[in-house]
Amino acid sequence: MKRTKHQCTRCGSESVTVVPFRVRQIRGESLGYCRHVILEFTIHRVYCHECHHRELEHIHFLSHPKSRLTKSLERTILELRQHMSIKALADFYDLRWHTIKELEKKHLQKKYYHIQTAHIKAIGIDEIHVGRGMKNKQFLTIVRDLQSGAVIHVGEGKGIAALSGALKKLKKSKLKVVTMDMANSYYSWISENFPKAHIVFDHFHVIKLMNDKLDAVRRRLTAKMNDYQRKQIKGLRFICLMRQFQKSSKMPDLVAI
Ligand SMILES: [Zn+2]
Image 1: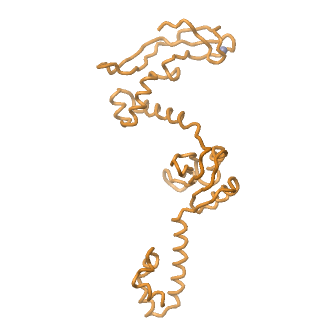
Image 2 (image 1 turned 90 degrees about the vertical axis):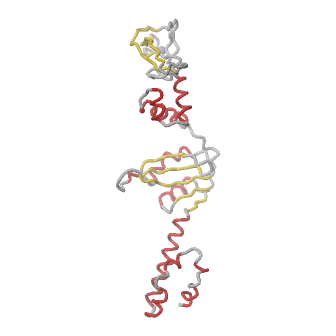
């Protein structure tokens, strides 16, 4: 490769000193039967006399100066990654598993660095447990757009502290509905930052509370019963908690008691 012109990438000045740095081997895209294409060339160090910036020269077919794959090979791998596992790709191109994983990670970081949130109307907040133990660090708080299913924010730990980054992202949104479990911290965070949004509790938690109350009533009534009555309703607890309990044939007795 013969390069006639070098430029500082920071200030654009052409007043630079170019010194050979090292010979680098770059993997290129396969050509026909030739699966291993290796490009070998000298990479240079560039020193700018205007802004005194030192850097490795930028090669137009590399995504960054230290990359070991050409841009076109990176694009092909990312395209194939939608249909193949990392291991299959690593075996096919004779690359390390981590090379492909890092390539994909960088691509996703770039793709999802800026998320459009202006259209978001409904979000869901919940935490998931990762790793062992029940310490705060072993939880991740996830905020999702309920319409598209996209993850908007992932915060370490649980509670309000984990949501601090989400506020900035959701500032421009027209939030109308927020779904969550019955944790008080999320409730106060939403009422404070999005006072117009409706809060919807996950029905599992509402039904759980209702069942607990029903259980308490059942216990209180059982305590007042005589032996005969207690025998009659023994084993009926789950019928009482069932959704269709009103249709149950045993129910009239229980109501009578
Ligand atoms: Zn410069």
